Amino acid sequence: MKLRTVRLQRFKRIEDANFDVDALNVLVGSNNSGKSSIIQGMHFAIALLQNITLEKRWSYNDSLSTSINPNQLIYSPSQDAYALGLGGHLSEPETDAIKITFTLDTGEVCSIIVRKGRNRNILVAVEHAFVAKRLSHLQILLVSFRRDLQEFRSMRISFLMAY
Image 1: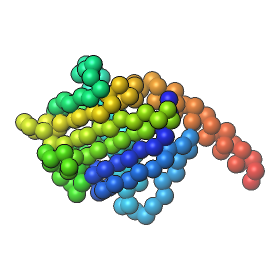
Image 2: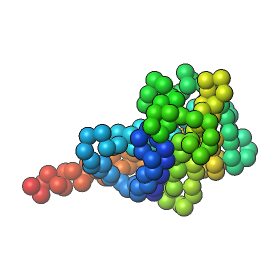
Image 3: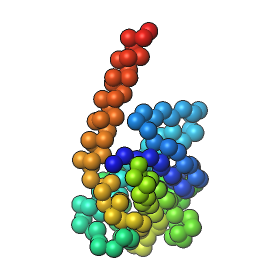
Image 4: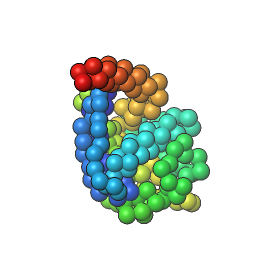
């Protein structure tokens, strides 16, 4: 299982970014163009899925909606989770929510939707939860990362030997 594409919507200053994922990815851009935000958005989405796993909130449905206290987040790129929405504001309407969509090499898709919840919580909805649950397992991601890292190292060695 490998990621094929990622789409970030309404995350920090990124209105809508869709990009392919490969064994080696290089983000190039000027200062403050969103390079770090892309990585943070992916990390944030996976961490939310891991939060759901640790708190045993997965259901037997293919969709899930749960509330998470920002203090319980495994990872947040900001101390204020409400500042992660587009333009620094996370709001309640789903049309304004952060949405991170992962497409796997198998063609399977899952989306994580984050919006302002009640009582200072954030509301997290997961579409295609069966796929998302598999993404939440760090071991699978690490195996893929290690394999990609080995490929990168061999590419780097080949590149250095060519010059």
